[in-house]
Image (cartoon, rainbow, N blue to C red; front, side, top):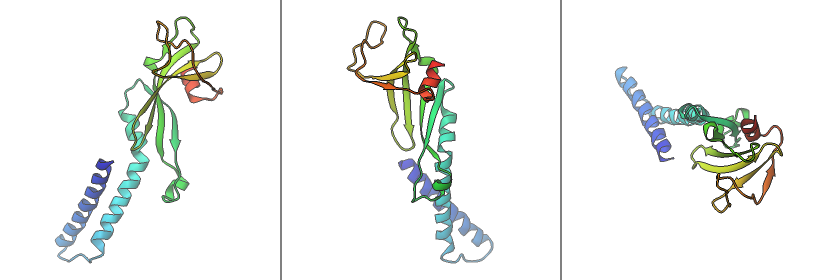
Length: 172
């Protein structure tokens, strides 16, 4: 967050400096309103660019084994351009190389999902996915596990429909 604020301010100062330099090279004095106006427009433009390119830049830096299974967008009335085309600011990913199949029940798979949000902390959740029954449950530190690392019982199961991105990625 602090890096974003710092970068935005630097963009504003840099663009104002370029405008002042151009006016000096032309041998004229810049009108008082031009420099702050250019700095404001440059900072505003940088903020919008950062908002719309965050997901693509972040996804490009992910290892090849990480698969993005779902993206989320948010519209904001205080940023009216998002009402027309909302940028991706959250996504869910899994590491397909770390999906573990239960040797005693091949339809059960253990997977860790990564929930990432722009400007937020990454959240990792471990799930047990039952492909045959179309359901998933969370594996917590208090969940009892067997010798293979699979839970002996899940407290609460959640139904997964056929179009669920996690089910489609793990069970196919």
